[in-house]
Amino acid sequence: MPSDLKEGRIVVVGASLAGLRAAEALREEGFTGELTVVGDEPHAPYDRPPLSKQVLLGQATAYTTELPLRRDPDAEWRFGVRATGVDLLAKQVLLEDGESLPYDRLLIATGTRARPWPDPDEAALDGVFTLRTREDGAGLAERLAAGPERVLVIGGGFTGSEIASACREMGLQVTVAERGPAPLVGALGATLSKLAAVMQRNHGVDLRTGVTVTALTGNGAFTGAELSDGSRVHADVCVVALGALRNVEWLADSGLAAGPRGIACDAGCRAFTMYGIVTDDIFVAGDVSRFPHPLFGYQMLSLEHWGNAVEQAEVAAHNMVSPGALQRPHLSIPTFWSTQFGLNIKSVGVPTYSDHIVIAQGSLEARRLAMVYGYQGRVTAAVTVDMAKSLDYYRHLIETAAPFPPPPGAADRAIAADITIPSAVPDPSGLSHGPTVALTGHLPDRRLTVV
Amino acid sequence: MRTVVDLTRCQGYAQCVFHAPEVFALHGEEGLLYATAVPDDQVARVREAAAACPVQAILLGEEVTSRAL
Ligand SMILES: Cc1cc2nc3c(=O)[nH]c(=O)nc-3n(C[C@H](O)[C@H](O)[C@H](O)COP(=O)(O)OP(=O)(O)OC[C@H]3O[C@@H](n4cnc5c(N)ncnc54)[C@H](O)[C@@H]3O)c2cc1C
Ligand code: SF4
Image (cartoon, rainbow over all chains, first blue to last red; front, side, top):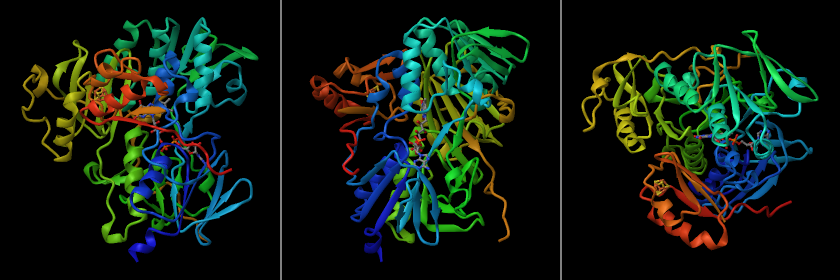
C-alpha cells in the first residue's frame, strides 16, 4: 500500500507559494506519479511580500519576484486557468475551459485575494488600487514613482502600514485612515499599536484613526475621499488595504467545509466535508486553510503568513504520500514578520490569543523590545521589535506552555518584565484591517443542509 | 536566477550583506531587503551569502519555466 501512494495522479490547485513548495516536497517525498499544478494567474509562482516593500521602493520590479525552485517538481503547469469546482465522487477537478482533471489526491492551495472596495464604481476610478498580485504591485509602484501629491491608504494593518512606510521613504505625502484606535491593533493589541501610531506620526504620516472612509470621489480619476468625521482627504492615489478574502467560492458546491474563513482541515491538512467528516484524499495548505492547533486550545487558526504556507505545504505533501500511521501533524508555531518605518517587527505564536502582556526586554521608548503575550497564566505569543535574535527563546516558551509572566531568562531583562497589563485585543469587526492570525472557532462555517 | 530570503528565519546577522552588498541590504537595524532578481555577475556572491547565512535562510534558484501549454 505505501508504494501505491507514491504513484498515481496528484492535482494541486493554486500555483503560488504553498502550491509550489508542495509540488517540490511531493517529489522529495518520492512521489513518482503524474503531477499537475493549476493556477489562475498567468504567471509562474512568485513571491508577494516584496510587493509592499522592495517593489514600491524601486529596489525590485514586480515582474522579477518569481520564487526560486528548490528542485524541479517535474510538474505539468497549467497557468492562467481557473478551477471552477471539484467532484468528490468522480474525483475530478473542473476547469473553466470545460476540461476536467482526474485525481487520486488533491491539494487545495488557492490562498486569498485583496478585499475590494465595496463600491465597484468608486473602486474602478483611475488611481485606486488594492495590493495582492504582481499586476497590482507593478501598477502601484509606477504611480508612486511618478510622484503623486498625496496617497490615501485605507486600513492600518500590516500591508497598509508597509505601503505608508514606503511612501514616506519616497518622500510622498500619505494619509492612513483606520477605523480602529491605532494601526496594527488587530494583530498586536493596544500597547504595541500605540508604538505603531507613534512611528507613523514621527515619520510624517497623516494618521486618522477612529474614522471610516465613506466615499471615494473623482470623475474618472480618483481625486479624494470623504471620511465619517466629515473631513475630506485630497489625494490622487488610493490604496484599499482592508484585508483579505479566502478564495473558496469555487468550492461552494463541492461539499467541502469551505466558508469565508477558509477551508477547514485537520492537523494533518486533510480537508473536512461540510458534515465535519475528514476526507483522506483532499488536502489543504496555505492562506486558504483553517486548522486546529493544540497549543491554542484546539481553536481553528486562519493564518496569512508566508512561513505557514511553506511549512503546511510540506506537511500536506508528506501526508499525501504516506500511510495514516506515518502521517505528521502541522504543529509549527505561527511566525510572521513585517518591515516598516525602519523597524523589523516579528511575531511568534498567536498574539490575539492573550489576556495580558509584559515587556520582557527593551522598552517602547527605545523602539526595541520583546513583548510577551499570555493567556490564563501561560505564554502564547511574543512580538519583537528589532530583537529578532530573541524570538527563538520565546518560541521555546510557547512550545513548552511556559508560565506567564515568563521567568527571568534574558540578561537584559526589562524593569517592566513583571508588570503585566491587559493585552486589549479589540473585536476585529470594529477595524479596517484583519489580524493576519485569526482564531475562527471550532466549527466549519457552513451550516448543514439536508439533502 | 532568483533569490528569496525566508525572513521568518532570518535573524538579521547581515552576513549576506557582507558577501553580496549589491543584492542584500539592511533596512534599519535588522530588517533585510534584497533584490529578487540576481544578475549573472552576482550569482557567485549570492551563493557565498547563502552558504554563510547562519540560519540557512537564503534560497537561490531558477524560476519555473512552463513546460506544458
Ligand atoms: C503585499 C503583501 C505583503 C505580504 N507581506 C508578508 C510579510 O511581510 N510576512 C508574511 O509572513 N507574509 C506576508 N504576506 C503574505 C504571504 O504572501 C502569503 O501568506 C502567501 O502568499 C500565501 O501563499 P498561498 O500559496 O497560500 O496563497 P496565495 O499566495 O494567495 O496563492 C494562491 C494562488 O491560487 C490562485 N487561485 C485562487 N483561486 C483559484 C482557482 N479557483 N483556480 C486556480 N487558481 C486559483 C490565486 O490566484 C493565487 O495565485 C504578504 C502578502 C501580500 C499580498
Ligand atoms: S545572513 Fe541570513 S540571517 Fe543574516 S541577514 Fe542575511 S539572510 Fe538574514
